[in-house]
Image (cartoon, rainbow, N blue to C red; front, side, top):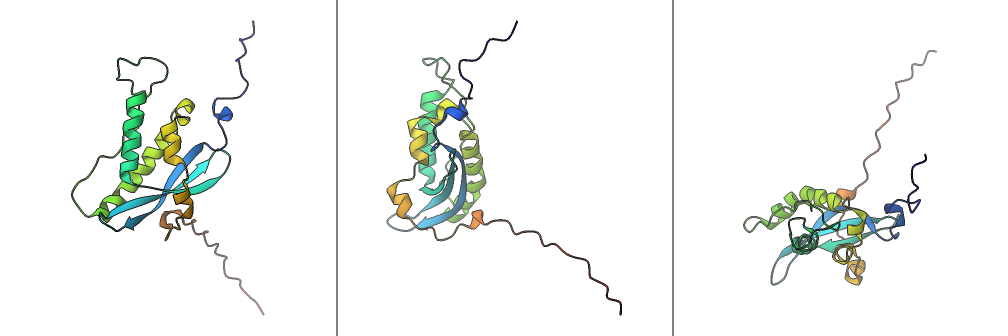
Length: 169
């Protein structure tokens, strides 16, 4: 007896819109000076449809997103049992003292891991409004010109060394 056929032929991922972010990598950090000095993480976002763009987020934007997603989908909430729960990746904690540049630089690998794990969660979570707004390129993001993208430099092609040619005369 054949196995029952699924209701749809495509996977959940295939059904997602093309503008859904599927990967994000911190390209650099930028210092903003003013009443309060802070750092922005310059993030390159790649979408399912093959697009890519830059967004600029502070650590507190990550923190607020994490708090929102935890409150909506945490499996520890007894009032919300059901299929739309999942364990969120851990977010690096807040640091209150120290050199702000060093703190921002040290957070890059952890935040990259956080975004990778976040975008690897179930496809229904990728449609969450808070998550989409975090990765959305605002008009301010579009107008911002990055100073440098140190972490997105393409790798140098390996030099192909050719053995010396021996000439005989």
